[in-house]
Length: 290
Ligand SMILES: [Zn+2]
Ligand SMILES: [Zn+2]
Ligand SMILES: [Zn+2]
Image (cartoon, rainbow, N blue to C red):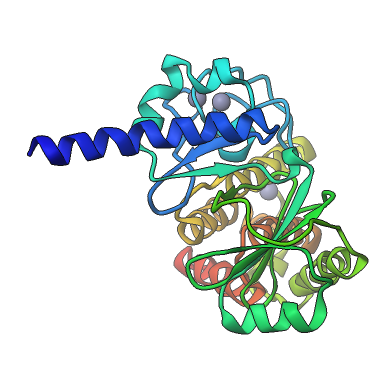
């Protein structure tokens, strides 16, 4: 019993000690759950009620002292890392994460052997770190983060987090155009996807009850933010958000494909496939009897 407790304490000390070491090297770090995802927001920040942090895509005034808002809370400041507001989370942390963009790097996260084989055949050699089933390929330089740039491959850089798995081996190479191009390709696919969506009832064109473009715009912006901020259960969050948007604007005919496209883009940035987006959208419409 005492033995088990001692081991547990050492593990707890370990996360913060590692985080402080990485911070001293200039890496903004954050605690992650054992499941490798970030911790949920505190009650004040739940559902982004605080408006979000200033460094987020939609900047907000949040100065929450706790490690809320996932990557946006990552810091290299030892005073914050050792603060009492972070102490509970370090105690519950399963692993240590970092914000690659904040560290000036891009992680190509390769989930499995197939993705690694593709990288070896396609990408310039650089520093690599072994993961559970695949590898992280780390390049110097930052870019937009995009999930699912190909089967089993995510790009994690700005506004993203990655699990710290050690310094890896090999020399750090500059971020090559071939990696930047993966994000471009993915974006154009995402932009095309909504065009294939048809929800017939939406074309019904009943007069909008809301009469205010600002109301619609605010609703869409909030929905995008809610999807963007989802730290776990992205699948369910996307569906619930689509449901909320459709229940507000599904009958008035004021939703355009541009609005739907924004929601799909937000969902795809979180790793949802175009197929899942169209399915979730039509399921939500069916549920509401549209
Ligand atoms: Zn908070
Ligand atoms: Zn907040
Ligand atoms: Zn409306």
